[in-house]
Image (cartoon, rainbow, N blue to C red; front, top):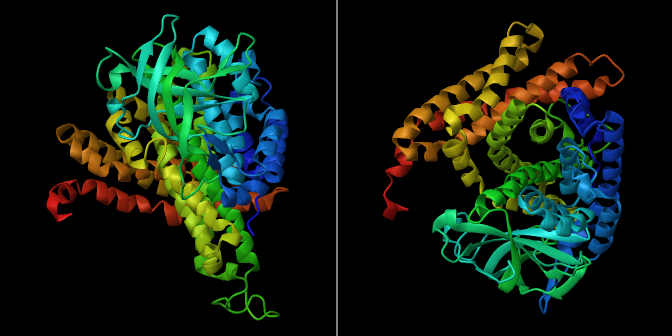
Length: 594
């Protein structure tokens, strides 16, 4: 049976040791984010995730959501768990204090988010969507809209969604048909059908606030004519309580491979009353305030599930007796050795561990960028932080979810036939992880975004926010023999990335298919190098502490770093070869031969 224990020690390492926490606590408004407070927050979050959310993860998967007469009911225990979540103030952890939030940094939020994804991904999607809707409204809504909706969303009394996809259009939102017709009172009538709407209908909150993309009559065709509207399930009364039912209804819920306790809905809007958010015809840019943050959050979903799978696999590998060690019995008093002694099992577990710890540190690196972008008093540094986030968002979303799925699959493999059986709980991780590679923009779309938009943006300005610190680190430690095992592999892989970047920049301008053909390999190469840089930094910190009170922790950190450099980073060589091969084999293949 799977179990979960929040990896608090590694989170402390990342927040306090790998990065300088004072860079965040010195920002205006974040002065309280000291190690002591952060410790208290993540310890309490761990209790909620371990004791409230994880115990209903498998039962929620078994029961799923139910739909009857337009009403969606969440599985047993979800309402009680949500109540505990709300009473703990977790929904407002990083929200604006003006609307009842605690105003904590994103650096803290990313750790709490990981724990929720590990413990119960289906549950985490409900408040996760609310936080995304909160961010769009906070950034683009009028003061009147913010005063009306945000306090209830921050408190968790009301939840939120984002309604983009329609039956005939997913990524290509220029084909969107939902329409908006103005009312005399300044509001709008919204009509259309949206599909794949996470948390579109449920029984956890008193009201659900939908952010809906629609096109007003006379607006330009394509994405330039889309606007964003806030459409509540119940229209708030003057006193802020839910009033009459709006023209919003759930037509059905999807029967899915995974995340079965998360309601994925078909939503029908029939002359529903809505209010414009931000500027007319700027809906896509306004929605992307939410989408970019959601893509980072989805990347953390891959990390969270990988952590849960790793913990379950390690526990099983210690207990399962099967065969003998190749170098002689390690457990001679029993009929067999634990499978942990076998090289292939150890390789599998270390692969997962190297990803989870590397991804956790990389996620913190990006989250710190969010904090700097939001709070740093220097405008130039805020711009640099934004450049960095723009560049890293597609990589985190795609690489973390690809690796996350691979990790859950590998964790299940450790269990052998037992892993394929529902009762062990680990096959659920595989099913839940699979959607993260698809929603919030498929991973292929993320790769195209990186090579088609982020790489050439501002004549390569975004890339400099990554390339410069990596190059500086390599140069600083090039002569340090103690760091050779980490810096040399990083330098070689970084050189491949630089050459691949130059190649795509040149070839892609002449023939966009060249960039498109190499996009997925390039994104993975970029991600492997980014994680190698983080692992090299982690190794430097750990190396200085292997003789202290926690020698075992730091020695394991160094061992995992070496495994990453020796067994995972070499993939960069094959990816580089694929990128440099060009697009000819795939683009010259006859259509009718497929």
